[in-house]
Image (spheres, rainbow, N blue to C red):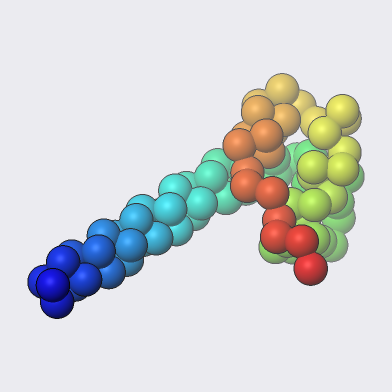
Length: 78
């Protein structure tokens, strides 16, 4: 029984790690593809504020940036 619990915990940890890596790759893609859009529309914003600004201005984004932003996960509600 303890072996099963350990296996389940290991699976959850591995899954979380994979999701974190994917989120990191998506954020890097947004940074690369949206650099000009971010400077023009969201000057001075970083991190979550920048992501929210880009999402709020999707209609004005370049095609590549718009696609990258659409793949970002939604920010958690607080």
